[in-house]
Image (cartoon, rainbow, N blue to C red):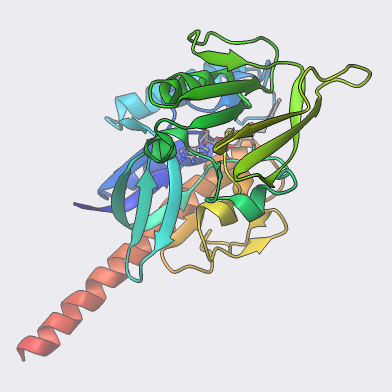
Length: 306
Ligand SMILES: Cc1cc2nc3c(=O)[nH]c(=O)nc-3n(C[C@H](O)[C@H](O)[C@H](O)COP(=O)(O)OP(=O)(O)OC[C@H]3O[C@@H](n4cnc5c(N)ncnc54)[C@H](O)[C@@H]3O)c2cc1C
C-alpha cells in the first residue's frame, strides 16, 4: 500500500499537519512518539500560544494528543531512519520495515546537535543512528550506545539480546534501568569516532569540567549515536539545506518535489505557533500537489482513450 502522505514527527508541526491531512481526506500515516513532543512536555509554562495564555507544556502536549485521538488519528510509534526520493514516490525506512508515500511532511524538530568528529565520515560504516534498524548487522558483535534521552535505554536493552557485548553511555543524569548484560559507563561524553585495528574506536572525555574520565576510549564493531532527531540531510539524501535548517518556500515545499517540511526544522523562530501554522500549510500544499497529480493522470488517461 502507498500512503498519500507520510507525516514524520509528533510535535506541534506534525500534529497540525495530521489534522489538516485528515480534513483533506488524504490517506496518511503519522510516525513518531505516542507521548508527543519531549520539548513541549518539558516546558514548565507557555505564555505565548494564542488562546491558551498560561498553559503548562504537559497540558498543551496532552491537548494535542487528545485532539488527534478525537479525530481518530493514530500515531505509529516508530523511528524513521532514512527517506529516499524514488521519482514519483518516497521510500521510508521505518525501524526494520520500508513503507511508501507519494508525499512526505518532515516535522522532526531540531534536537540533532553538532556531529562529533568522524561521525559523518563513518555513518553507515560503523556508526548508526538506529539500533532497531541495524541490530541484525551486529548479531554476536560488540556495540556501544550513546543515548541522549532515557528512552534510548530500551534500544540498548534490545541490542543486548543479540550482541555479545553492549556498553551504554547516558548523556543525561542517572545510570539508567538496564539489564545486567549492558555495561553502563557514566561521567563521559564522546569526543570523536574513527577506525582502529579493524574496530570502531569511540574516544571519550569527561562530561563535566575538572573531572577525570574513568575510560578514555571504547572499541566496538558499531557505535550507535541515539539523539532525539537526526540531521535532515542525513535522513534524506539530496535535501537542500539553508545552514542547519531545510530550505523551503512559503508553501513549505523543499527542492524535492512532493517533499515538505514544518516546524523548527524549517528555521527560526523556534515557536509552537509557527510550528502549528507551518504544519497546516505543509499539509495543504501536499494535498494540492496530490490533487494536481491526480488531475494530470486523469487527463493523460482520457487522451490515451481518445
Ligand atoms: C525548554 C524549551 C522551552 C520552550 N518554550 C517555548 C514557549 O514557551 N513557547 C513557544 O512558542 N515555544 C517554546 N519552545 C519551542 C517549541 O518547543 C518548539 O518550537 C516546538 O516544539 C517545535 O515543534 P516541532 O513540531 O517542529 O518539533 P518538536 O516539538 O521537536 O517535535 C519533533 C518530533 O519529531 C519526533 N522525531 C524526531 N526524529 C524522528 C524520526 N527520525 N522518526 C520519527 N519521529 C521523529 C520527535 O520525537 C518529536 O516528537 C521551547 C523549547 C524548549 C526546548
